[in-house]
Length: 208
Image (cartoon, rainbow, N blue to C red; front, side, top):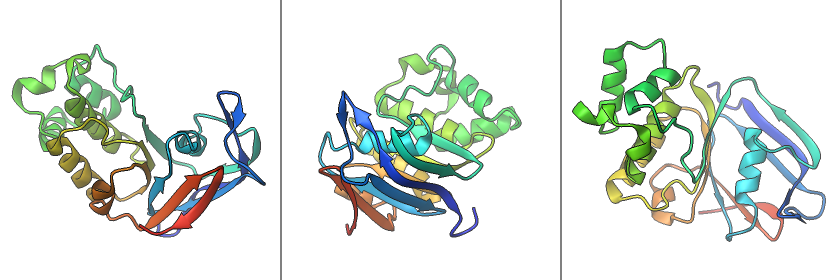
């Protein structure tokens, strides 16, 4: 991704959740340029997930303007519901990366700790950590590759091996990302270079 390319620009964004407005004043302004690595922090219920959905196009703002650069935005929700639970890990990856050979896909899955019979397990029977790793493989090697990755509390309920795998994947990723997390150790390990805090309906630039 060309450095400094604007992948998302939102001005005066307003949105509601559960019947109440999330942002106050003139709304929220946010510009994301590649390949920024952004941490979005703030208290529970502040609207961080709502802001991610606005950035990713999963929710339209009630007011304000949005501009997105052409390209793929990948969204990793807390529910980890991206994969088809009835298809195997290998079949899911084949759906996201159809032009790669089977050998290439097996090598990619091995990097995410899926080897041997594990690649033929249905996604629906995977543990939380396994499902995260399989989802990451499909997201990061999808065709076309995403230029913006949105992650909502990705370390919730993960074991240390899975958190380490997530850190490694994000360090290798070359696009922009926005990650919502309360895990300071995790955020310190993924080379975040921009910190945002959403609280009381306002989005501000902060430090780590």
